[in-house]
Image (cartoon, rainbow, N blue to C red; front, side, top):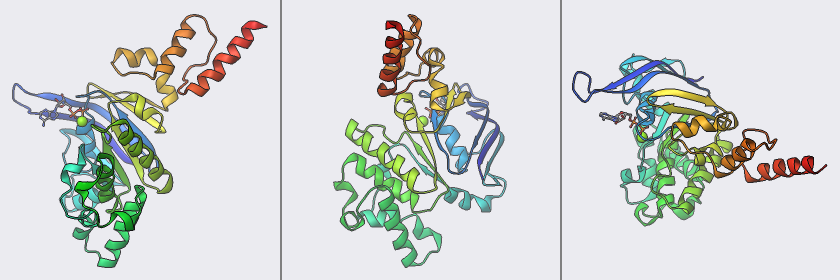
Length: 286
Ligand code: ADP
Ligand code: MG
């Protein structure tokens, strides 16, 4: 069953001079098992949107449905929705506070009426899902870990709630390139190994398009485009117009096309570009 957002409008500070229309008639459907990227630059409404998905905020207009439950209708169901939709905020490591990694990951499940045995199993599984060796990491202090490792512990804490959906808001913000790669690699593996639906929120097209199956572009609070990364990248001019970058290789290919090279659209990788350019060079030589 999906997450569905229908005709969503979200207004901050209504009735004041600071009124902001953060989301404007947004319609989105995300199916179980998908790996989706929500992309848009700062202020486009990404964080507002995902907080509606787990009932942290409620829309000014429109409806959000999670696995058949209308969010916000029944306050008693909010707990279930928060558990179904796991949200990893920006800089989640600020919320780590226990003295060991295992205790930190157990924090959420402890509120779920589970046996100690079940909690231990969940903690172990969650830490392994984000690429840790459980025995090696469980007694470590979260504070002695690297930036990327801390973030993986925070993600494990959400996974231990066994959500159907895992939403990550700018999960690599502030990390160095090694930390970024580590996080992206683990998220990709996590999606492959579990059946959790992953929604990755980012302002960087270049980071996300390589990973996800579908991209939703938010622009000024509206869904501006959506499709596979290839479909989105074939609209390179439009992406640049709205200030979202395209990979360097895609802009080289576009330049070649503009100069009359017969190369297909939607190329994302250097390997693919090389193959296409060589084909064209051969065609020209005969
Ligand atoms: P993003 O996550 O894409 O950067 P946000 O959802 O945070 O976008 O913000 C969307 C719009 O709502 C922006 O114009 C932002 O300034 C505004 N906004 C976000 N949070 C608040 C808030 N708490 N109060 C008032 N305006 C807000
Ligand atoms: Mg944000």
